[in-house]
Image (cartoon, rainbow, N blue to C red; front, top):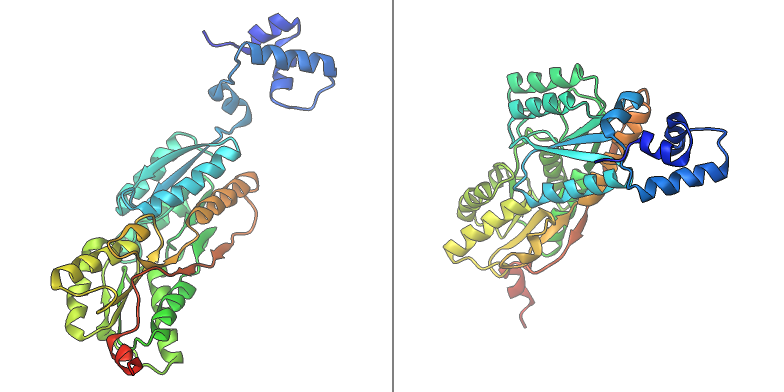
Length: 348
């Protein structure tokens, strides 16, 4: 049977209210000797606070929620690890929900978490949240009427101005394209995520910025809009192979996997015939058949920072909302090389 405050009080010869003040760390005038005796007895009796009772007094459950878009994608799993580790450091429990890239499921998850009386939640919206007006309005209304503190992670929602944590995706697009251009590539294809997604649009801005700097004409035919999925990488690569690209910038590592599959089917060698840059540096990147050069998002940092911002919001709901943007870096592996035309010019 679980030990209670009354059991400890009886063993220590003090009142239950005295034990409660000591174990909850509240200000008191209890002697140091009595305080240590109570704490020692609590340890000996393996006392564990009744969280339901504590929450009734404090109006907090010390539980936060995380709604993320696709639990099968290792990038999102790694981000969730950052949230959970930081929650544990602050003695918070974490409830995780998967919306499977569905807006209606995302709103249901918010309802579910609020019904559990969580103290706050982090939401990573579906990739296509900004496409359909009906879907967008559904989530906008849910968040605008939500009384529970929340933070938006990774994907911005149109017309929702709230605490937002993400990587600098324009810089990421710049770094990926600049690396390929410096190797000598000029016909660089892009396979994007949904261009309704803020991050995808920003990566494309970075891509175009580099082309402009090097006076390489932007060709919209070399941009294939897909989703952050392997199938989009495969279909996009099959389309771009017909357009004589020498390199592809895949807007996620999952997309890059699809490109590698298409290249293998077509007998195209990576990196000899085609250079490939991914995005995320998820756990799959170094394990690809050709280890993937990619843009590393500070994945765990993003999760950890989202948790910190949420806990600050819980403590002070009136504080100003901010964007928290963190720089990605280029990670070079084996999937990029000089284009064949450049190699020929280097031969004696």
